[in-house]
Length: 168
Length: 69
Image (cartoon, rainbow over all chains, first blue to last red; front, side, top):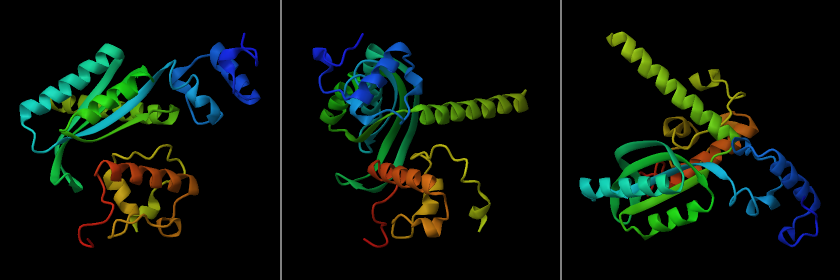
């Protein structure tokens, strides 16, 4: 299928092309651990397939509540258009550990989504252009992070169920 | 200390959002403590370091504490 000399595979070393072959036969997006040769990251894993991402961004603390809602909605709808939004967690206004652009507080939003890698630079560009957004960080989740995330959502669900039981 | 009772061997992922946990591993200036002080496995120390650095970028933890600045 993938010969070493095919033009689209130029520059892929032997172990990497073996790894790529393995990927193509068994594409499991959730199993994206740290055990693949790093040369390959630019070719397939970042751009072609869907990954799970975690994004945290800070909206300036001086923004009005309706501005904050607008930003959150536009980010969410952008992700919904280009992938699937899993979970949005608004932490609300928090004190910053240090001053950013003369501001001491910010509105934190933490969200998880599934999308192809090409979406991330577009999304980050939008975040960068918005003056109200002080910081953002997108992380591609590997298998360990996904397991951690599932465990957390599970325990949160358990707590919620217990509370519901106590009230009943 | 109570921290010695904690089981670090089976820590799989250290979350940058868990600032309460990470604060155990920084001193009052905001510096990351060396492993011989924190007494954690090397694998976990690397994850802690990375998580602290991520938390700093998002202003969850200070680069330099206010009391030193």
